[in-house]
Length: 258
Image 1 (tube, rainbow, N blue to C red):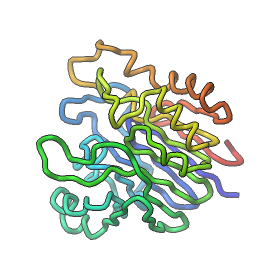
Image 2: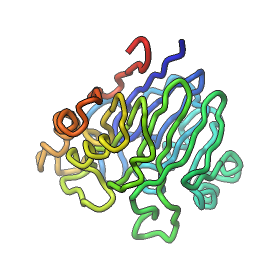
Image 3: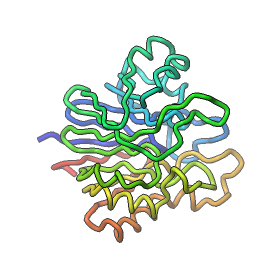
Image 4: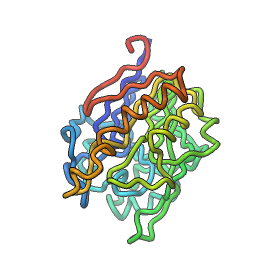
């Protein structure tokens, strides 16, 4: 019987293998990202070329141009509707030719799995200095397991429509000592999101990896603690869900061998 494996490489970078298909989410493969420094875990060591990369939105900590250039092979780039033009400018026409744009409800088959775009509540712009915009999305991957990769999001009612799920890869924090409530999940809201999607298993992501240079001792609990606090909150809000807090580079098997 087929299983699904997931390896968390820090922040939102996840290697997902399902039904012989390998997917990489929002890769950041470097030790530095603008004013941010990798404060925990090694840089990702990809086992090979993925079949596809899932890019949830244009923010630089999710659509990281130099990391995308470093990914081996010629994977499919599954991006939000409207992001292909930015992809062409940032990565060149050959990469743009590998783009598949999805809006919520759209789907694409990658080998034996189906990737469906779902809504996310998060700003879709590249940043305050840029006019590039494309609505942020999440993804539901259907193969041996049904996996939700949320990207970056706040709470919204349509989350009820995603489940039931086998696995939720859910953001629980951020990359700095302040985290705005709009468009993000803290551990409490992430537990509520988990209750809504009805996942059997959840892995917290988007925390504990990058932190602003010079702020290593500022609000350290917001760096180290969100994963465990999410697990504690989820035990109350979604008691039927099992939460696994992974270390950087740790692999989890979903299915008969879990």
